[in-house]
Every structure is written in C-alpha cells, then in structure tokens.
Length: 262
Image (cartoon, rainbow, N blue to C red; front, side, top):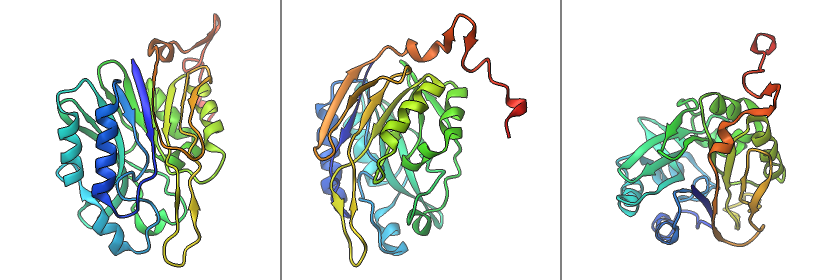
C-alpha cells in the first residue's frame, strides 16, 4: 500500500487558493492514502468566532467537500483533510475522510489546544476506525497526540494506520509519534504544515513542518523538513501493523491488564 502526506503553507482565509493547492497535490499523488494538515483549507490563527463561522462549512454538503469529492471520485485513493466544520450552532475542528465513492466519515478533534478552546466546540464523534479496503484507518488531529488514550483506543478498535492532520508549533510531537507507534504497533502519518501566521495583534505562530511516516517498530520511514512544502509517498506493508507480537511470549494488546488501569 502506498501512503503519503502533503506538507504545505495554507494562506489564511484564502479557501479557494488552498483548495486548488490541495487538489493539485491530489492529482499529482499516485498512492492509495494521502493525509493533509489540520485546518488545511482555512488557516489556523482566528481572531473571532464570527471569522471561524464564516470560514467553516457543513460536512459533507459544503463546497470544499464537494470539490474534493470531485477530485478524488473514481480513483483508488482515500484522502484525509482538516477543515472547520459547522453543525447547528457549533463549529468543530474536524478532519474528513473522502474516497473513490465520495465522503466516508468525519472525526472532530477531541483535545483542543490553546486558543482553539475559544473558537471550537470539543469533538463529540469519539474515535472511529474506517475500513478503506487495503487498511483500517483511524483519525487524530494534532494535540490528540498528547493523550496516549486516543491512539490506544484506535489501536484497540483495529486501526492499522493513524492519520494525523496537524498544525504543530511545539517541537515534541514528531518524536512522540515514534512512541505512539511502538506502544500500539501501528503506522502513523503525521501531516503538518509549514510557514507562519501573524494576525492583528497576536504573536506570530511558526509551524514546525517535520511531517512524517512512522512504522509499527518505531522506525521513521521519512520525515520532511522544517520549512519546505513536500508531497511524499512511501510503500508500506500493512500486515506489519496486524502482528501485535513483541516476542514469542508477549502480545502487545492481549497482554493488557485493564482491570489495573485508572
């Protein structure tokens, strides 16, 4: 199975430009699963709830989802992309999974970071796993990496690959995803962004790049640069994520003792 990420620099508020950039990457990608950053079509540093509302859309009927569906439909490809989702009076930091037949599902970010708590409602989808044929995938968004329960829940539900759209500004996540993969014996695709946002009187946010693909044994199969856009693809053997044996005597998930866990 060929999997990859698209690391790039979304322009705040320029949804059509960002969507066109994403669609160009989709057309150029020749793999099976592509992961894009968190809030890839809107940008990240909001200044008001009104602005968030205007840059959000309903899923899957909104114009961004419709354009992405059109770009992907009929291809043997699944894409995960982060966007702001409107539902009723709430806005969620969400990621959508779209495949050859259109919209597949949505994950809403459970663990909101920093000023996201001002703009978004906490996610209410829980952690879901989708079977996309060649693999079972689960979605996390950025700061969810900080909570090992999130990745473990997806692993227990059968995820082979953690798809991880991100807007990382702290340095710890790329190395921490090695541990998430080791402790769950899964693949992970972290798609971060690059560039900087500084709006109105806010402090500038500098995004660290370093998008990566990590194997179940913790090997970093590829890590992008800090600063450059990159569309990357790597072939993986999904069967590696389905063998949870550490040695002839230990099985990672079967050896759990949840009766002792708080």
